[in-house]
View 1 (cartoon, rainbow, N blue to C red):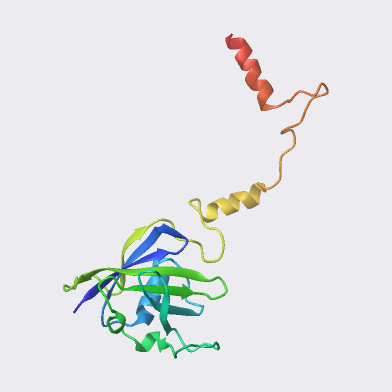
View 2: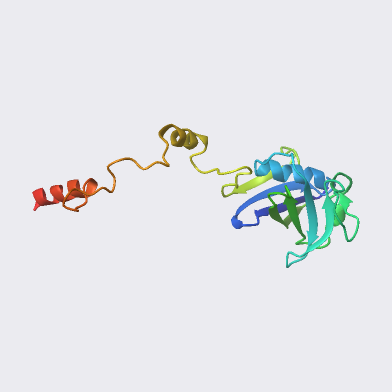
Length: 187
């Protein structure tokens, strides 16, 4: 049984990607769930895949379900379509679009085909993670939720008193004055 490895790039930043391994006999629905899991997104929104060429042009649609929109050709349904059935060349590409309101777009590229299945892996699976995933519903950074608590507690959006003020003679007071006083003592 063939194991396919797809590199799933976040469209807006190619340094952010996930490598997802999946059996060729598994469905696009399983690939859809694996991508969402690898990027820590929920599974609450509409989604679709497009078969693509080397120039990332959208081809045949493989949709989560039939949506109320106009189709040039009826889409394939993710849960009924195996991945292997849509592979046309050794570097096959797909475009994955999730949450049509936020328009999350991921670019998938087939980077490896292996004939041997790893018995320790439950397919589909994330084989590699590079870069910090975008936050699905807002900002997510290196500091995470703890920083939001600090920001809320201390209200970092407000500027404190005394910063940037001038004395009666029009000279800056505060940190600059302290620094110059120290400099005079050293001289």
